[in-house]
Length: 146
Image (cartoon, rainbow, N blue to C red):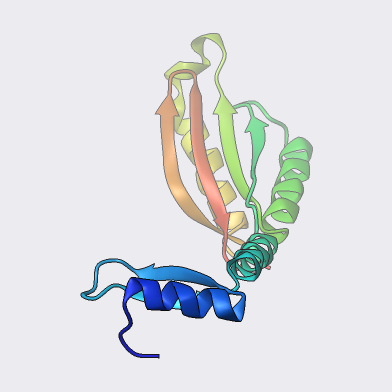
């Protein structure tokens, strides 16, 4: 409509039964639009809801092991972790030490290296294995998210 005074713009909006909405207050002169503000708010709310539906929530699943975990249990936990990674979730592996087991962190390093090797097709290391008190932990992220 071009440059109008405030009073003219308000009268024009009232005659059309619409609202005068300021779009940009920074520019000289300020930019305003004549529109149905309620409808505009409704459309913005709908856009936010659609965007919220499309975003995926990634959970962190935890798999706990011990230095003396037997082979069958290890394979069982590995299969579960693979299933979690294929579903798009992150997996936190933790090896829990009890008592004097903490004097042999190389056992946990071997376990973590084996996990990385076995799951390299479905997961990548997001956080390298590191010792946190009586726990060695690492996080694997899925290579491709569904």
